[in-house]
Image 1 (spheres, rainbow, N blue to C red):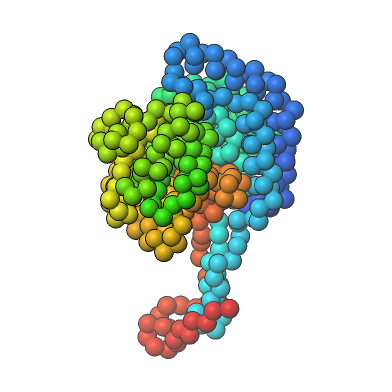
Image 2: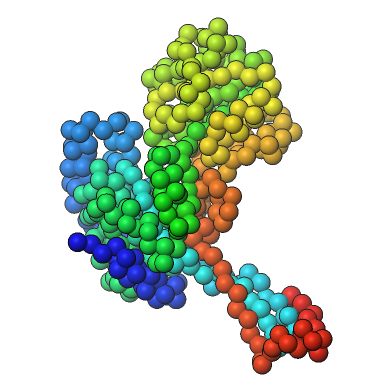
Length: 426
């Protein structure tokens, strides 16, 4: 029987060594992992094919199967991510502040790893590589729990990454894979050893983690993303952006789910958009005003609260931008929302009032991604407001500590007025 407290404790012990590794050792590990993934790609594809076959036999939904697939294209993206991560500046040991509190009493604020990061994710085996390599670069140890539907792929990826990392000088237990589903409820109790949890899954799953663990949780529950087409939008530009945001990769959390259209531009936009969406086999659900302009299914209230992760789009007409903002702040998930307009003043107002981690003008919501932001990759997207927000890359995986250097200084001297602080930044 697995002792999860011991497993987490071992990772915690390894984290102290991991936190003090030179950048060159961490980069060498990334290079070794990239090389090993290339050399073992046929084995990875074989294991993934077995996971895919089982998923189809089990009649898993198409969005799950899309996320589960690990092919040459996914491998190429992963290797590009590792390469860009390799070339990013070291996030550790950066001096954020140096201040003389008094003569001979110097305060330094410097970045350091968080420690042990537990990530629980579903479906996507490529997430295992992204998470583990980000943790390596940022000096953290990782405990990973993937979905059972990707069990074979996750296991082979873990074995390849662990062997390559150890060969490059990373400490034992720098990475841990939990394969038993029951392990989730045990892991989230290990608050003495795990410093941060990042759950990636359904709203109900994330809420379960948050309600049952004392460990800080970072992440997002849903990806109900919006595009608002303003009355001053360019029609061709809007259609292209909407089509990409909805169909470029339909199973992602940054995919467009609800389209809001200003009533003054709807009659011009919707027929063009309907033709483009139907060419991609997108099912349109519209409000009553939408149905007066194009033929589509009726949108119920719950449609505007739904993350479809499928070829379905809800459309609602609005009277003005204020109505669009109110709708987004009420029904959205604070993930990524966009305005399409040629009026930059209106765009600035939209961006100020929409309470989301990512607010865009005239571009697809699919850009909400750590790799596309130049972070190398991401461990997930955070819709919270503390510590990290949006795609969480290297900077979101480090914290800081204060180092105070003195020469026999004592507080009593300052409390009694014998000495005083002069606070001089260097």
